[in-house]
Length: 64
Image (cartoon, rainbow, N blue to C red; front, side, top):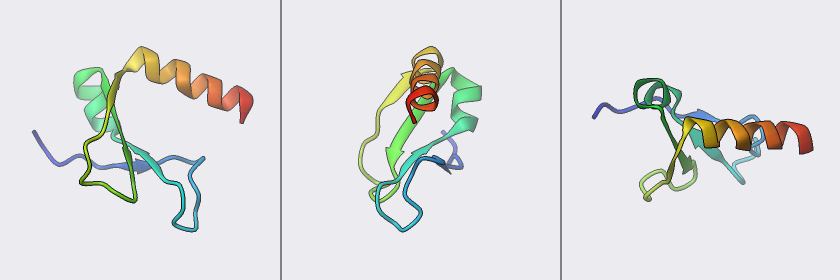
């Protein structure tokens, strides 16, 4: 596996606090979206289906 570029969520804190990151290149290649805590990138991170990720993003956008 390659070392993907991780993108910081626009909803993450800009002051180094809460930080959610995702790897869109992996999502495009596999259909699975890896998500991690940007403050602890070496920790294990979950991966969800693209469909589940879209439901999450839609919900955050609607409620955020």
